[in-house]
Image (cartoon, rainbow over all chains, first blue to last red):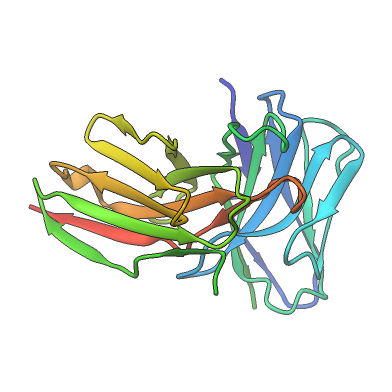
Length: 115
Length: 113
């Protein structure tokens, strides 16, 4: 059963703690992405990776870090430097970033609440 | 100006109604265009791609006007199950962060019995 998994679904942390969100895909996609969504707003790109061992900053990368050591996995760390970390985090993947027609498939998301 | 702008919602319509969503985008070099559907507290899912010649999938029709940088989605004979937020999504040019997807803020649709 191919798809993207994110865990956990809900995550609660205290301010000042780093937290890592998991994203795994078995679609054999090269490209993976992290977005955050805030109420009433569109998705905003945090980081993306077009290939293993390479990743690029998106529009709102400050306070976040990622790694891409394996094709299937693209974990996101929300650091204590992120000023407003409470949000819905969505991971996505696609066959490639370059081709115009490939859609992005989304995982079910992780709702992070930091208090 | 936002890169992708959609009609503000919510749209409240009765079952069986026809409803149209509009969207404009700012970058004329954008590569491709999509409508995604997002149910409450769920991830977005692709509803349909939008082609220059216009395309239809059952009760859904999408149109693209590149000259006006305008995209539309028409839903005919709306069902209760169509209630969701509809996201207009534009794939930017490759030189802009590898052709990233740019999302509109979404338009909420509520279909009532």
